[in-house]
Image (cartoon, rainbow, N blue to C red; front, side):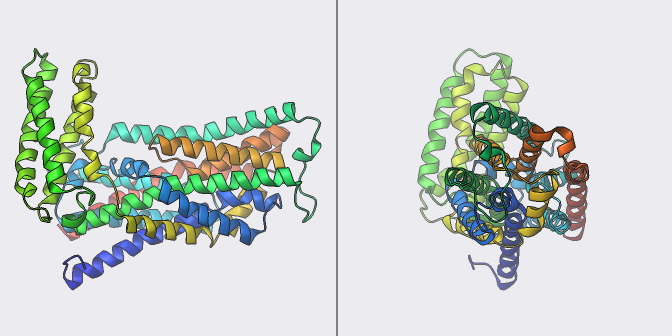
Amino acid sequence: MFGLDIGLSLLLVVCLLCVCAFEFINGFHDTANAVATVIYTKSLRPTNAVVLSGCLNGLGVFLGGTAVAMGIISLLPVETLVDQNISHSLGMVAAILLTAIFWNLGTWYLAIPASSSHTLVGSILGCGIAYSLLPGTGTAAVNWQKAGEVGLSLLVSPLFGFLLALTLMALLRGLVANDKTLFQAPDGETPPPFWIRCILVLTCSLVSFSHGSNDGQKGIGLMMLVLIGIVPAQFAISERYTNAEIHANVVKLQSELAEFEKTDQTPPIKHAVEELSQAMEVLVSNSASLANQPNATRDRFQIRREILLLRDAVKRNKAEHPSELKPMNPLLKEIDGLKKYTDGAPFWVIVLIALSLGLGTMIGWKRIVVTIGEKIGKSHLTYAQGASAEIVAASTISASTLLGLPVSTTHVLSSGIAGAMFASGGKDNLDKGTITKILLAWVLTLPVCLTMSGTLFLIFRTLFP
């Protein structure tokens, strides 16, 4: 397989299966986010609901792009992403996957809605911090700017979900005050009126699709880490671009950088130009050696390494001197655009993740559906509450996907239902025990996963130096 010996081929298969297992668990762990409302409002039968949700989750993976996937990967220290030691790459991925699978399975078994995004981000940060503890690596082992963006997204989204659901319920009461049906709970097994049913099925579909487009990308990112770590020659650079195309692009950027070097420069710009010129010279030299070899793959990891280091230099300079480097911004943006060569995934990877997430969505859904549908509020879920929570979840997740940020589907929808319940009866309509469990999982996920993955990473690095 990919020219590997039997041992590495087996290792690759095991790692890919582990990523699929993570995404499969993610599917049934988060199924309740989409189907709880349509099941508890009798809009769809459970079997029909989970099949619909599974199919749309898979479709979301296909159409969601890779911005979130690359955003997750960028949390890792650049040094680990350019390390050609296979055992180091596998140690990192194994620590992340084992931690994420352990926490997701544990919270699912306890029927506690917990965030797969929190789990994955905590696991990745744990590896980054642990990497900084290794001799000679220094302390800048985590992309703290990106970590801050992701952390803010995960922190704000539940609060946003609660407040927006509260607002939507108030608007519905004002706009359709004459129609009391919308604010009623289902009567036995009788489905809701047709128009309400259509709204609830539509919002369930939107949450399922947006969940796939956001959460599915996390599996894509993990699978690419495995492939790049074990088979860098084939997957370090996107298969859509030839060696000649890459070389032509970097030569053009080197020429533009040289022209900029001739202009009057402030000290920050001069420093940035010198650093980028040195990195660009190495990149141009190595890409030239491959430009006349259309099928060469052996040194493509080196090209990937230099592109990542070059982009890291751009980000570092912009962070240190944001205002002084404004004249260079168009050129810096072009250099950062080299990410198109390193960011992306083969079609078969997307297919595997879509199938894993979609099939997982159809299994194991009942535990957390019961928690979301019955235990967050003390009264039965009404049509208006279900629709409000789903609209909040779908819109929040879609916006986060467009921004390339991971978001907690679980916490957005749970907080949306809590907000809708609060709007109907105040705090007395919320089950304090369930809310406490969800909040506790929200608080503990990050430190537990960070500690576990960091510890595992250091153990693996010690065992396989």
